Length: 354
Image (tube, rainbow, N blue to C red; front, side):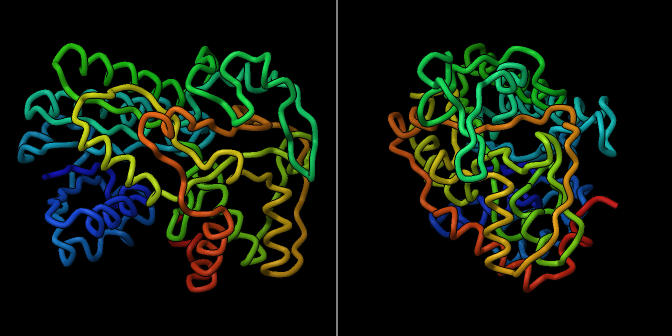
């Protein structure tokens, strides 16, 4: 089996590629990356030694895909993953759409031409910000907890399900990913392609690049260990906002099952750590204090655009359809990042945007 992984020099694409090579003897992996993200060059080394052919190419350019060989599956891990992209970071709104939507169009055309299946990594940020912000919250153990999960459509005791509304606003980033999902599923119907859309929560682990809006668990631990300035932003500066996290290697059993199934179960599923792998920034700071000692954290009560108090995904459908569940405990993920931070004290400088 030959698999093309886009964004293979990113944290998620790289981690999945390594795990696939270990778990699937005989698999052939072709990697595509534009290497524009700070830190990508750090992950470029070693692919040839592992037997992976790396192609320097950009999904925004359809011609960069023309010389690629036929593959059986495409794992799309290439995107601008920042919820603030196009608004408050170094990426313009046009660049964001070109990366996340135009790139998807070009990739789907490639898949149509070579008859390849699609494994799309999407995001929890497709869910409605307005409706998430409107959820009633209680505070337990320095963390927000939603009230009334039994009366809010798409909200269960386990978290936000695939039935939660996706109406606007969801951010430019979320809109680009939601549009990509819709297009991918339409290509599945129109051209009889197996397409799986996996909406991921926060992915976290050692080696993740250092931006708070893309990998908050990794950024926070690295910054805390280095005694760098940290701030609780929004929600009164309390740090009560909650996200769940998942190690990307835990995606691999699901991706393997989807490839083996062909097109039998094409559709959308949430993939995340869930409530057992969720914590607030305040709780994460307590963990860091136990691990590294005390560190002062500033408070900035004003909320930023697109911030939500709580976002935990319900992956019950993935468990029911694919017998999938997260395998790496939250404590293991945090400790893995902490050890990486200790071994690479300059990681944020090497991998963050200037």
